[in-house]
Image (cartoon, rainbow, N blue to C red):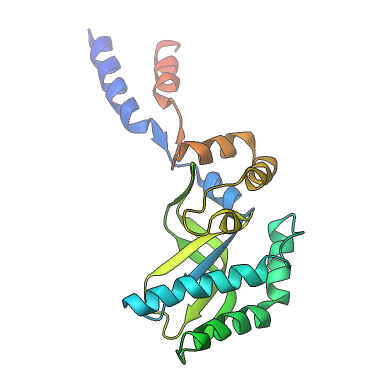
Length: 202
């Protein structure tokens, strides 16, 4: 008589165990991509507009240096080699718009929230990033993926171009790539069946 009750309890527990975080999922993705993070001086309308203009100036500057990069490591090396040029391009944009803000560009390891680019959702977690602070760096930020070059496809919506999509697909495991497309935070595991099998096959 106890077996049906046990079965129901296990079924209920199984629902709770359906979604188990896959720690390797975010780590595998973060090992393969380089993000781009621009932080405005403030949340004022003018500073937010300036942030977008600085973003465009940096992306335009980086288009040629990053054109031949085939891995995150190559992209990082190109960014490091051009950090002074990145800051100069951003600072020139700031001055052209009539502001005297400083600009600081660096490669950092930062926490990013979940973000969707087209039909791909990147999980929250720590990522290597080209980070650019404008002035006090206290305003709302903007980000995209610098490698593969989602930024160059569409800097506003960051829709994933075919070339970038192929790069991701070729560098990630099939399971991780599919999860990226599904926009899942977790990997589904049917633990309940393992428990039931263990119970009834004793």
